[in-house]
Length: 161
Length: 261
Image (cartoon, rainbow over all chains, first blue to last red; front, side, top):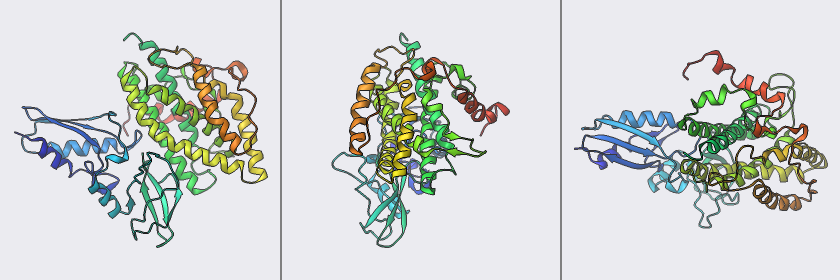
């Protein structure tokens, strides 16, 4: 009998193709795991960005990993939009792993204002808050580019969405 | 489904709008004012093409055919995008003597982003749940485009005499086609799209007027609700430039039908 917990544990092995230390669970992309009596697994995932080119790779990687779990007879991965992915879904562990990769986790704003350019993340390298935005857009749809005025290091930050 | 014809018509408008402006955005790559803007436009174009893909997939689910075929193979007179979005970025082409107009791009993009924000708000209240859910997600992404172009709009308006003069010329050019954005073509107000053209225009105006006032720009004459030349893109009426765009965009797809990437 396959447990949902076993599936969740295996999903933590599936990394974001563009951010290797961070798993799809860390990113908050998994919204539902269901296992039936026959060992068939249904996984619902919510895309970080609608146009993310990594979605097909993620679907493939999830399928390949989960089919290896003992007792799994089949895997279906569906992308859903309810609830929509927001950067609040990234777990605390995910935030730490993002920072370890040099990507500042999304800024959390109590105000609910998603798009203030005045709120900048601390530098993931030196921790300084003396940073500024260089470009709202970055190397992938979900990231912006910042610069640390303290250690003089450019760095990326996940967008708050 | 009772409302299917209306829903299909609406989805073609959404998908075609995003696809065509996304293609125009992509033509800036390598030509944008500076490298940060090249990067920004790579992301913005990718977002828009991704949104178009999503809307085409909703059409695919409704039995309209394969999403890629809908994007690449439909002739110009079946396209439902607004004419404003198909206009070239400027004289020349991507490969030959591109004399693209950044001022026009900023004005057109800002107007479209604002219109799209208003439209997405309406779509989140659509009775067709899959569309309402997608719209709620896309709205969160589009905020970045609106913020970006608002920043550029203010920067050009308050920069130098030349940047302001150029922006005014870009605004005038985009404004001439603006009315066509608000045409709903064959989509009547209904549970699927619970708003009228007047609702959209009023909300758009209420958002944009303060921005013009902020930077001391005169509010242009009332927008023409019929585009010049009588072209209503929502009814399949387009310029020659759309046919050329589709020719370029679909070239590879048509050359190797059935190829997988």
